[in-house]
Image 1 (cartoon, rainbow, N blue to C red):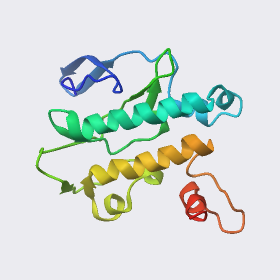
Image 2 (cartoon, rainbow, N blue to C red):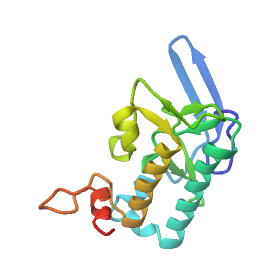
Image 3 (spheres, rainbow, N blue to C red):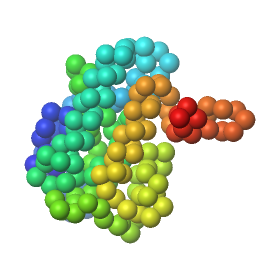
Image 4 (cartoon, rainbow, N blue to C red):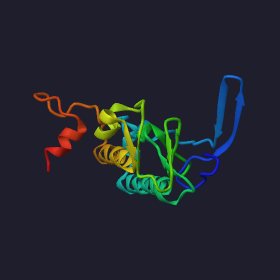
Amino acid sequence: MSKLQPTNLVKLLGFCIEIDERILVCEYMSNKSLDYYLFDSNRKNLLGWEKRLNIIEGSAQGLLYLHRYSRVKVIHCDLKASNVLLDEDMNPKISDFGMARILGLKVSQEKTKRVVGTYGYMAPEYAINGIVSIKTDVFSFGILLLEILGGKKNNSSYDSDRQLSLTGYALGFL
């Protein structure tokens, strides 16, 4: 992660590895995470459409860097609103690379033995078969996009008769 220092990723300032304890020191993000604003009935009003668009664009740029422009191809594997932090100007920065996978530059996908992450954001091919690729993060970004636009969590109920998730609700409009 120390090699990854673009604008839309949280900066790694230092780290410590001592016996069984590992600590990462990252830059402080004064406006907390996106979910702090997005899913709170009072604070979500602070996110107008211009700020939401800025957050969408910045998050997309961060993912594009990880997937295409970094020295190594990084798949985040846990992109969600709580892992998008906001700086003092409400600019987004992707954080929490604890579940990230590094793929070779010429490798398009990899099969993992252990699936980790947050279920509402996992691509089906990853959750079912353990296949990690850029598509894994693109799926998660799609869920994040629906949450930013709709202002509701993916696991919220949208139809009392059928218990639709945000994804199921959005698919009903297609």
